[in-house]
Each structure stands twice: as C-alpha cells, then as structure tokens.
Amino acid sequence: MIAIMGAAGNVGSRVADQLLHRDRDLRVLAHRRTLDGLAGRGAEVVTGGAASPDALGALFDGAEAALVLLPEDLTDPDFVANRGRMAAAIADALAGSGVGRVVLLSTVGAGLADAFGPPAGLRALEGRLSQLEGTSLLFLRSGFYMENLLAALPLIQSQIVNGGAMDGEVPIPMVATRDVAAEAAAGLLRREAGGPRVRLLLGPEDVTMAAATRAIGERLGLPDLPYVQFPPDGVRAALTGAGISDEVASLMVEMQLAMNRGWPFADVPRTAASATPTTLEAFLKEALP
Image 1 (tube, rainbow, N blue to C red):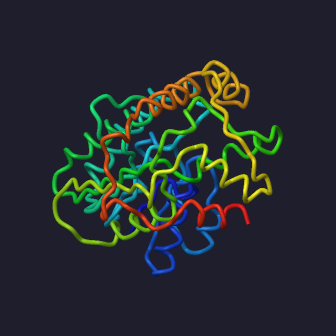
Image 2 (image 1 turned 60 degrees about the vertical axis):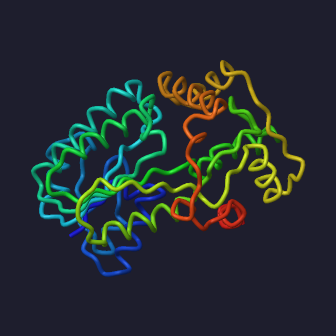
C-alpha cells in the first residue's frame, strides 16, 4: 500500500495515475476536493484535513511508502501558522505509522536558512521528518512550477498583458510537474536505505518571465504580449481582490521581490542530476493547444 497526499494536485494526481497504471494499491487523502475518479479506479480514499491526526493516521496506517506535502490554501488568513500545524501533524503521524519510505514535495528555498513563507513551512517539515528513525527519506526540492504561469491567463486574456512584482529579466529555473511526479513515483517504489536524500529538480534551463510571457503569447496568437513589472502594492491589491488572503498576498509579493534579488536560486547550479527533460515550449504546447 502506498499513501498519497495531494492526489488532486498537479503532482499528486500524476503520481497516483502512474502507480495505478502499475497496479499498485493506493490510499489517498481527500482534503478539500473529492477523489471519486481515483476511487473508481480502485484507490482507497480517506477524508480529512492535512492537520488531522485521525485522518493522517488512517492514511498512513499499514502503508509501505508515502508521498507527503503541505497543501496550499491561498485563501487561508492564517496560512503560515496552519502550515506549521500541518507539518507537526504529518511528522507525528508518520512517526508511529511504520511507513518505511517517505517522499516529500519540497522547494529549493526550503534548503536555505533564511527561508520564509511557504518554504519556511517546508523547511520545518524537512527538519521534523529528518528526525524519523528507520525511515528512508527523499526530499524533492523543485524550482518554479511551469503550471504557475497559467494563473496569469485571466489577466492576459482580459488586459492583453502579463505582469507581477517580479523583474521580467530575472532567470528562473522552471520545472514541469510531470517531471516532478516521475521522480516522486520512482522514489516511492525505490528501496533505498537511509536519508534524508535531497534531489534538486530545476528543469532543462532557466527562463525569464519576459521570455515565458512571449512563449505564452505565441501559443495564444499574441506574439507581442508584453510582461510588465507592476508596483508591489498594486500586485498585492490585485491578489486580494481575486480572493487571496492578505497574508498570502503579502507573502507572494515578498517572494517575488526576493526573486528579483536572486533568492533562492542564485547559488543553485543546474547539473545533469538536477536537470529535468520537459521544456517550457513542450509544456505550453500541451497546456495551451
């Protein structure tokens, strides 16, 4: 039995699909969305929150391996505090579960001492998991998910412009979640002793937001689509206007400004081991046919 958190998400859904294709027994956590499709394919579904000891205990009970993550609720007014509660609950549930292999979906920023916001929550979870005894641990620290670019489509389609607080000429390692899912699925099936082992997943190349915007424009028939660096206060107001909580909006703007200064990717070189195959062009060709 393999347990999966986040089975409705971009990575977790792909991991679940790959494992079901391999006829593996799955148990998935239905946190905020129903998982009827996976249930119809034979997966066992546990319903409950990611900070619920009962739900997590039922999810991990008897599992040989587990995919874990911190779910992101962008409307949560206590986003950081609740991520801390989830991290503690996940680590505590795993400690008494007997799960032998754990794969954590993390981020590059979690490896840095000055991590803040979501990476800070993941840094705390990495630390808690590292204290588990007799558990094989794999931390997948990814770059910027290419799927995040699609959140700009409403702005692009209504205003014929893309933008944010980020400098459009800052290079960013962009990775497709399909590649992260492939690594996660392999890690769940692979029997490796010890840990934690850290795997960086940085995509095939760095891409600027200006270049990514041009690539999106080409797919949409807007070859001259511009990327504009907006004032931080304006970006924050736009995010809260879209229903994102004040705390999360502030964190998102803060992280974009930090990326302008090179955080957290400046000292993270791409190697053969950290490069992943899917290019932005290939991703957009599938996402925007």
